Image (tube, rainbow, N blue to C red; front, side, top):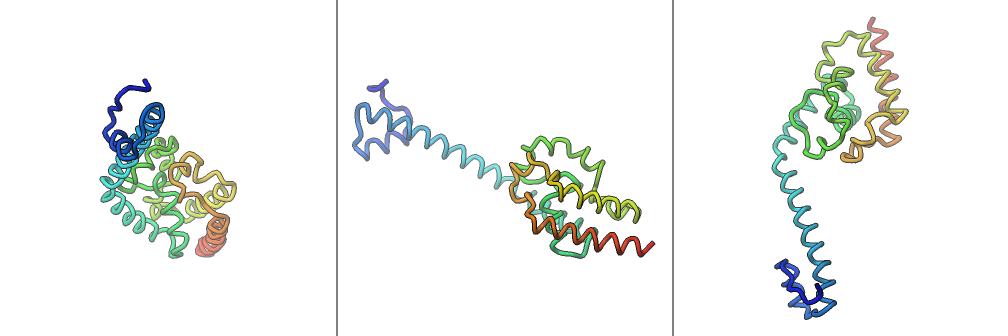
Amino acid sequence: MYGAQNKNPIARAVLSVSGISGRRASAASCRWSLIATTALAAMLGVAVGCATGQRVTSAASAQSATAAGITSDPQVRRILAESCFDCHADTPASAWYVHLAPSHWFGASARQALDFSRWNDYSAARRTDEIDAIARVVTRGQMPPFDYTLFHPAARLTNQQKDIINAWKMKQTTSLISAH
């Protein structure tokens, strides 16, 4: 193997420019082959992400419109859209990495439990119950699920965001109950 000619053109070019030969060339060629393969995989990932960019943009605008019907608080709208809507709303195709999380594979059941797209169809009592449940699972760290945040780290909620959700819960629960 040590005397073998490297078939990777990128590795061959780097080795010839650097003047590396013999055993060092073989080890260096393996490293450069690995680097070239990794770079190619990364470029492919970026290309796939860019190819779905149009749908992500339309998904973001649809999420914004859906969130506007839920609350007037822009911070809560942003949190819900970023961390909940991929599974709990009927929005257009999400970013490619969203589909890697096993919890997203069961998005239909998530929407059966809570569908922000149908929020305005819910009764005031159901909305109150859902807001209470949202605050509870967010506070406990049950939502968004770990496997989803692994692929979509921006969905991970900070303590400050959890506090914002809890304040929204207190405000909304009071206003919905008083409207009764």
